[in-house]
Image 1 (cartoon, rainbow, N blue to C red):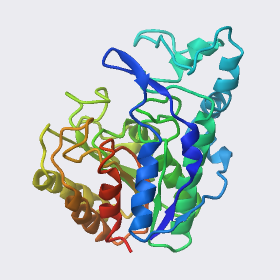
Image 2: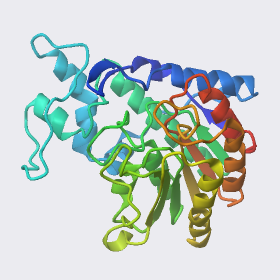
Image 3: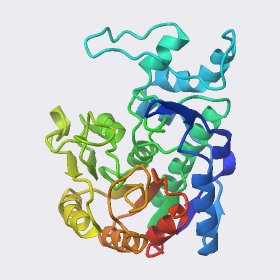
Image 4: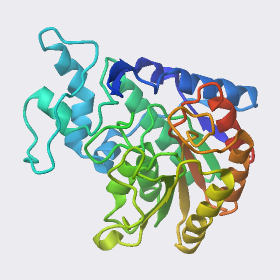
Length: 339
């Protein structure tokens, strides 16, 4: 197992507005640092990523959106009395014009869907490095490695073609999938096992039939992102049938979760895909402050073992997980059988 990581992620630690309070983001640098420490203790070496091809980011996302993230902090600094983080305070209503405004404040709202993301001085550096980690892992798998893990931070699966939210700015799983396609794969699957629905991954690929997306997650009737992730969202036009959502109730234990995994694995196995990307969120853990599921550390080893039985070249990218006391052990447990 090759592990790709970087300490550039530490340059990003923004603010979030949640439950009526403004404060430091729950998605902080210690998450990746604790995973790094746990993996080194388990015997993994952490390799640095190659530079990312930014033109790839502009094909998975819109070029306009990537340019916005890359320049937003410098533009923010030009405003009088600029605060510590660039954050939106207004978003387009559902019946409002979809025209992108010229003003930075308006663009912050246009390019986001949640108030849990902000842009600080090091955000673009960290986002770009996180994408570099995912593309490096994809390149390794494309070159013949069976497994490669990207310790991506910030995470990515909530980022859509042109909006950030859910702590995500660039969709690392989608970038890895596209990189595998560019490298010669005819069809790729993305399996999202994060507690929260991968709404961004779904939106990016929902009209395509070269990427199968399967997401097992908390039912959006009670959980973030609320407005995507229902079972009847199966893809659009050419992508119809190539998006699968398996929403689960609060309190789901590993037995019920595993039962939900089986039809997803069966579909992947029957869909003629040549590579797999796993969006690994360990916020399904029983002690996670942002989750309601009942999955234990040892269950992640069982989960990974079952996924590995697909016998596909596999890229794993890190998504959520906020029980910081256990996040390292949980990720290490998932990676343990993937040698």
